[in-house]
Length: 469
Image (cartoon, rainbow, N blue to C red):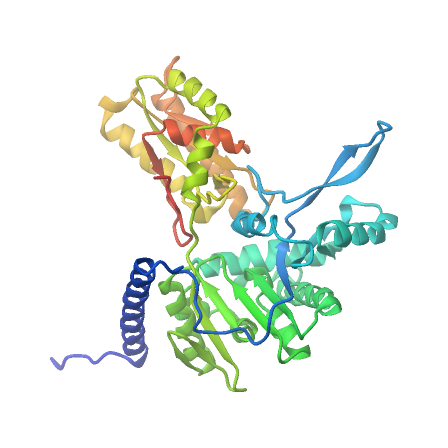
C-alpha cells in the first residue's frame, strides 16, 4: 500500500494562494479605512486609479429603466401617456439599482443618460418616435425597444435560466435541453443580439472625449467589449450585482470565454465580495490563461482591467427617520395589537434600505431558499410543540412574472408548505404562517420589521443581506 502523502494539484495550490492574497488585501483595506476615518477622510474615495479624462457625462446601461409608463389624466379629463419617474418601490423591476436611482435623482440635467429596455407592446407603433424624444428630453433616458421573442429568450432564456443559476453555483437545467427553440444555443444568440442593441444605442450618443459608460449586471456581460471595439480609449465601468461562481462551475458554460472577455474590456470591474473576486480572477487565469492579481487582470492586448470590491450599504439615518413616520407608527400599533403575546418572525429578502428607505421582500426565486425556510419552520413546530400557538412566521413574497419550470415548481412547493403547516398546526384563532404573496408598501414592510422579534433571511447562495440595526 502506497503511503506517500498526496501533493496538492496546481488548481488547489493556486486557490490556496489566491485565498491568502485576498485575506491579506482584506486586512489591508480594513487598515486603510481605519486610518482614513481617523484622519477625517472619506474611506470610500480611492485615488489609486485616476480617470483617463475629466467626466462630462455618465452613461448608465442596465437591462431595465428606472421609469415606467402610466396613464395620467390631463386638464380635460382625458387620458394621456405619462411617466412614473424612478419607479423603485415595493415591487421593483431591478431593486439592486435603487441606490443609483436615488443618487442620480438629485443630479443636474446634463450629468447623465440612462440606457435600458422598454417593452414596445405597451405602445402603439406610431407613438414610439415621440416616446423616444420625450424620454430623452424630459428624463435623460434612451430606450432600447424590445421587440418579439429575442428579448424573451435573452431574459427568460439565457439570463434567468442559464446565467442566474450558474452564477449562484447551481447547474442550469437548460444547458442540457435538445429542443432547437429551447436550448442554450438559441438563447445565446438572443443574448448577443440584445447586447448589440444596447451597444448601438450607446454608440449613437457616446462622446469618447468625456463620456464614461457604467454598465450594470449579468444581462449585459458582452457590452463592454462591443463598446471597446468601436472606441478603444473609452472609459468603461462594469458592476456585477450577483455572486460570481467558482471557476470549476463557470467553465461548464459553453460561452465562458466570450463572457470573461466581455467583462475584461472594462477599465474597472466591481464585485460585491472578496470571495466573488477570487472566483472571477481564478476563472480568468484558468480559462483564458491571463495573469491576474488582487488588483485586476492583465489582458493580452496590454489592457489592464482593474478590480474593485464594493459591497452595498444602507442609509441608517434615513431608515430611522422613515421608521418614525406617522404612517409606519400607525401600522406598528395595529400589528402589535394583532400579534400581542406572540413571538413574531418575519421572512424577507434583501434589505436594500437607502435614503428613500426601500426594502424588498423575498421574490419567488429558488435561490432565496423560501421552501427551505418553511421546511425548517415545520420541523421546529413538530419537534417543540410547546411553541405552537405562541410563534408566527410572517412570510412576504413578491410574485414573479417568470413562467419557467423551476419557478412554477417553487410556487407549488411554497403553497403546499403553507397549506400543510397551517392545516396541521393552526387553529380557529391561530395560524402559524401569515403568507403575503403580493407587493407591500415600504411603510408596511418597515412596520412589520419593527414589530418582529427576528428576521429570517435564507438565500442558498450569494447576495448581500443587510438587517436593520
